[in-house]
Image (cartoon, rainbow, N blue to C red; front, side, top):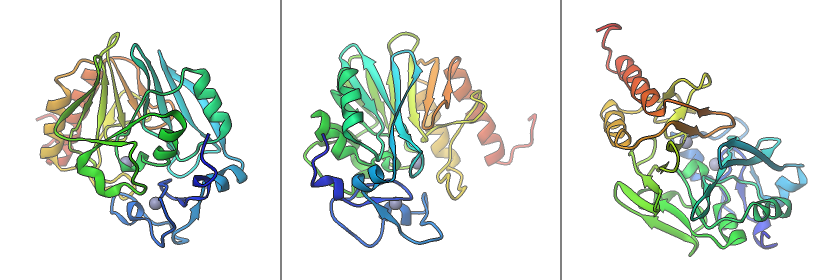
Length: 274
Ligand SMILES: [Zn+2]
Ligand SMILES: [Zn+2]
């Protein structure tokens, strides 16, 4: 259960990041990859979200993958994914909301043994989630500066890859954020969990990458090429994106390859068909 003390901690209404103490501004929103809303900086808290009527939303997003978010949606509409793996449940990404009912439902699904987060836009209330399920949170060292609520539950990894389990590896593709992470699950036909580090497009036959989605700033071509090379070393049929139903259900490797090709064609100004 969330500790009564932490239910009062400030949560940014625009990005959903929870901070360990009250503050004037939200560094995540001041960054050029996010934004401060026209009304200025606005705060709430877990108690505030509850009072506003937000509740947990659970929906299966794929085989062995349960989506967890909030209804009505909050902040950037974060949804996390609970992976039912051979070595225990892993929570991929996190959400700003948590209440007793959500804790109960997740326990009924077997709890959480590990949490891993793609990048700061999904740090949200990760420390409360870690405490509620007694699970460590794996973050890339290169994004440590964005942690709003330091805690012993946070484990920082470094380098290009980090094994989370026999069939789970965290990959640092170096796009969107220097410490961004993508999770590869090799079980079955293989799946990639990308958050919006690699964003699944609405038609689900394409993906794309951006340095800033909010401000429409493209990612640098050399970084995109390097990320595609790194991810191409893994086999995956499915790609789970950041939002509800944004899931590529087949041909994942091929989708990534032709999407990166299309992106670079426009980004580098090469005429179509050449
Ligand atoms: Zn914010
Ligand atoms: Zn993001």
